[in-house]
Image (cartoon, rainbow, N blue to C red):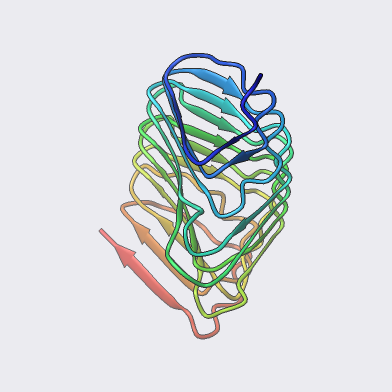
Length: 212
């Protein structure tokens, strides 16, 4: 019989998890795994490291409450692939981070809407990538922002995302994040980088920081 429900899963080797439909925490270290039955992962955390490759082909919607939303992908060739994820929503508690670091990649090209402040997207280190190429709408139901930060060779792809009244952007030295489409922000920090914001016309109540 195949496993259908677990509280926590840590795997180091390729395995068959086709029947797994309920999981509270996922860590994959150096292995390639797919979870085709995992359509509900609400308020849970993911760690992908040391060249691991994880695909969640059934996860279309994700809701964070007060425990989840921390997705960390670390190391060259480490990939979290979310091919059909379209929406992230959540409550205003904790400060979760979706992070690609040290060459890791988070691929969510069909994510269109994020309604979940606070929430941070952070790409840090050479080759690190967060692909949000389909993202068009970010909003928060509270005063907490949704933040996007790129540093030291890390990149966040979000060419369609125009910003919003609770969207914050930080571009540190060596980081890449498209800026030509940004129209509205609550906070903008640029450190050790040269960028242009030709469409940015609304920062009502917001703040600028230009450093180094």
